[in-house]
Amino acid sequence: SRSASSLQQACLDTIRSDEDDADINWDDLGFGLVPTDYMYVMRCARDEKFSSGVLNRYGNIELSPSSGVLNYGQGLFEGLKAYRKVDDGGFLLFRPEENARRMQMGAERMCMPSPSVEQFIHAIKETIFANKRWVPPQGKGSLYIRPLLIGSGPVLGLAPAPDYMFLVYAAPVGTYFKEGLAPINLVIDNNTHRATPGGTGGVKTITNYAPVLKAQTRAKAKGFTDVIYLDSIKKKYLEEASSCNLFIVKNDVISTPVTMGTILPGITRKSIIEIARDYGYKVEEQLVSVEDLMDADEVFCTGTAVVVAPVGSITYQGQRFEYKTGDATVTRKLYDILTAIQMGRVEDEKRWTLEI
Ligand code: COI
Image (cartoon, rainbow, N blue to C red; front, side, top):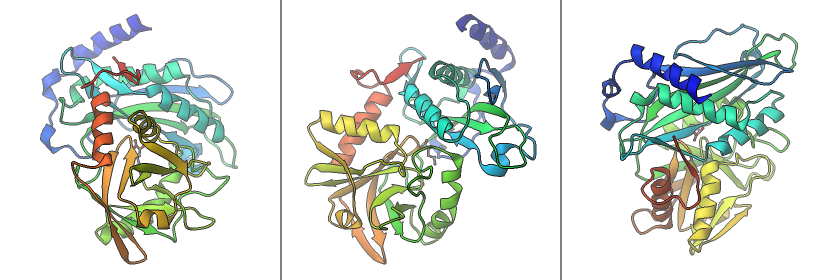
């Protein structure tokens, strides 16, 4: 409840250093891990429901060597950002109930109990309040919040774990890619596929991410920012990049790969589709082929971490395709509209932000 949480807050305030005290250069934020003060932990057994959680000091957690998450990858994660409001010291969250619902859908797929939407949002708020000195000043970045849901109990044979842990930690972040807000350069890897029909590409399981590290590392060694993966059946339709969804713009028509179970249904993706339609663009969710990419005017990526990132070039089988970037692009316009809502610089007509 709010009063219990205020009490907890008061206790925390007495042992925590001053708000101005975060030992960090706000001008130097990227997307590396900056450890913060507290994390939220809530546990439950397989056949139970989550009930209440606690704030612990941020630090290592103890897990059985035979925990479900360590042995069989029974785990999900989420990502959301809190922005500092200038005027009243509050914070803005962007559509946190969408993250909560996505975690619930993922938990169903991965045979895990999940927190309710209210429990999820409560945990997010507690984590932000307890780490508020780590929320960057306006214009310098955001507090990235990382909820995890893991099978923490022991198993040996393959089975759902007997116990689960919902954990939320946070870290201050700036831009995701080393390019900052500058255009990124992607490469299509047609040997690596991140998902397959019937698999888990459409949920945010931790097991979707390590399998692309090899392709990502190879691409970075060649100077690319990241990798685009194609569908695993026809090997010609775009799915997504390692950490974000994809959009193309051609003659002011915007297209994005339709999500049919192999592509993560991004919350930024969904919001950009809606914003673009509101501003009169035609937006198609459809199959987008490599050929479509070759004659696109603009390409951009979306994601919570990435926000809206302009793509300067895509290389496919040794051929490099270049795209329009800069101020006079649809990409920039959508970036500006989305971030103005997220940072509270315009009235939030859609009621997407939650002020805390
Ligand atoms: C996010 O955009 O929040 C994600 O979870 C992607 C992650 C690979 C950084």
